[in-house]
Amino acid sequence: MARSTDRTPKAPKEPGRIKQMWQVFKMTRRYDSRAVWLMALGFVLPVAAGVTFALIFSRENVFGLVMWILAGVLAGLLAALIILGRRAERAAYKQIEGQPGAVGAVLKSSLRRSWTGSEMPVAVNGRTQDAVYRAVGRGGVVLIGEGPKSRTTKMLEDERRKVLRILPNVPVTFLSVGADDDSVPLHRVAAKLARIKPSLTKPEVLAVSNRLTSLSNSPLPIPKGIDPLRVRPQRGR
Image (cartoon, rainbow, N blue to C red; front, side, top):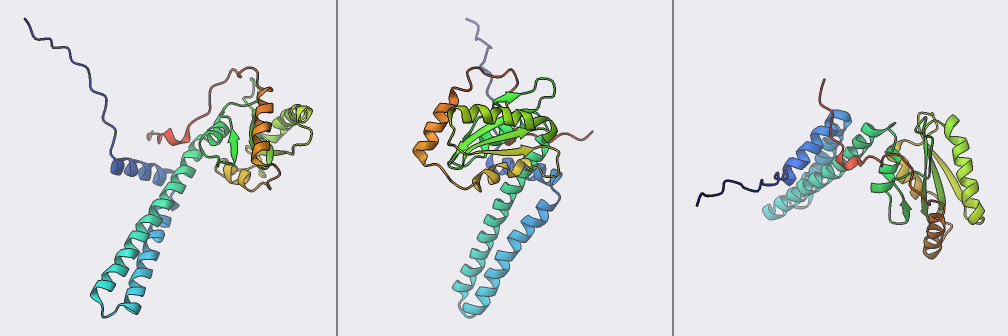
């Protein structure tokens, strides 16, 4: 019998952790020129502090000297990685800023536990692609307009009336993400929500979320939001 030559193709091997970090670093450096300097500063300061403490407290103790310096190096590496993570997220959001569905990407991947939101908008203008998203948390209901305020203000007001019709005692807050000077930058949306003063308990948040589900009977015919964690750097032209 002839040996079968058909073989199941192997799945492509995922890059290792170091390679992934290097790819993230290259993407961040490409879109954020300050990231390298901030990472370098975040590494150097703890190392310098470790060396200083070593010379002050363990000048004649070799073991203590080494431990202080090692602690400074490890703290510097940790600080550099934290800075890289934050600047990488900001660079990723910078790439999708202004695109339809960008706010949905933030609500999907960056909200804290006290807030919930859908990557799908609750209202959308099919002609301009302006949209309104909704988030629910301890601060009440937040309606987020994606697009210029001149076009999204009416959409926000319409959605507020719908919310207040079934939840008259729940505070409703507006946020605007767009090209206006006083708009919230895309990477600051999650932080802006976290700063809203709490007015609901956790059980009330759940009840409000369930009531609002009745307002979304059918999905809107637009694509889902962009996932900023999967954004790849554009190749040079």
